[in-house]
Length: 251
Image (cartoon, rainbow, N blue to C red; front, side):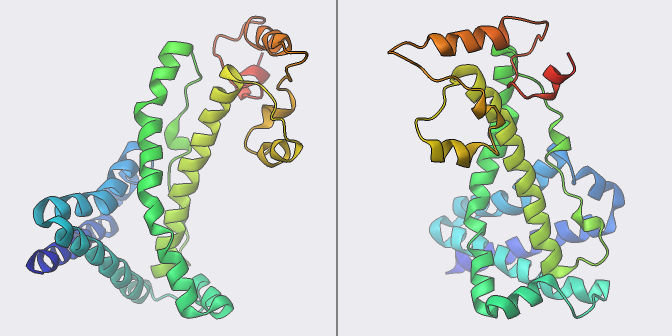
């Protein structure tokens, strides 16, 4: 129990200091709103307390870090609107009315266990995708153009509205970049249509090349080989990008 208490209080103190520093320093905010600076901030605010808590106090320390993080989250949601003098009408307040306060709050909290999954995905973008750029000439991406946050610039967002919108802001960029990278993987290594019309329709938004992918016929992958030859062995495109990539449209 002592580990739980110490871990929880230290987490609250750490997150409070980090939040105040971000609110007080414009330069720090700019550094922490895009690219690797944002990745570091998310890791510090979500992953570090849990890791340190677990190392320090085992399961009790981990529980304390999680409770401390939740305490810091709700403290920010209560205090920040007072600082910003936010008007009474809020996004979260409206949705509380729509589905009920407790149902909405529980649903919001239920999204938090996905944070480690998004972090893992982000680390894969940072540390794994560069191998594909070198080995098979996949296109490079300006990752900070995808992974950034900007909704804090809207004065009307404060407290719970701000914190949850920033979470979605970051998460959407991470997932969108991952989808863009996966388009290269699919079209390069396996441009084969699914044997399911429904699945093709469902995946078309994230994988626009799907209507171009080939269908093996008569026990042969010749149509697939022909498509690969057409897309990657002709023309002057040096990168092995997915078929609808902007680099191809410039040619």
